Image 1 (cartoon, one colour):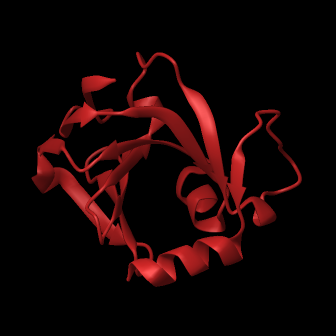
Image 2 (cartoon, one colour; image 1 turned 90 degrees about the vertical axis):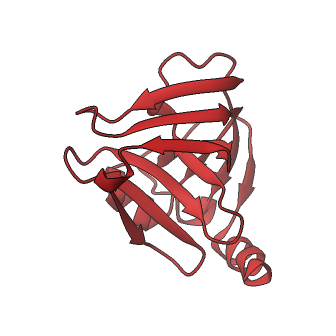
Length: 138
């Protein structure tokens, strides 16, 4: 999928992504669930991302390996950005016209709450696996 443009709820931030991977991920960690009230459904957008209105983007360093961005005007969740690579993961819902989406991975599967489940067959990573992976990235 190529060149998709979206914006936050109020329109203060416009984002253009050169390439979106249709294989999306779901993160069950407590931080993602607190941030959005539910698991974080994200498409991988790589590092070729243009943000207009970046003066309206607030960053929150949520871990030693990533930051989260949101619009300071309307609060729209815009991205989860990896520090080491500059790659963006963005909410699937920011791009309403994406076709061919497939749930590919579930992160923090060992702490997924018992009050929901997905029937999709996906790869999964536990907390220990994720911590080990990011220890090698820093």
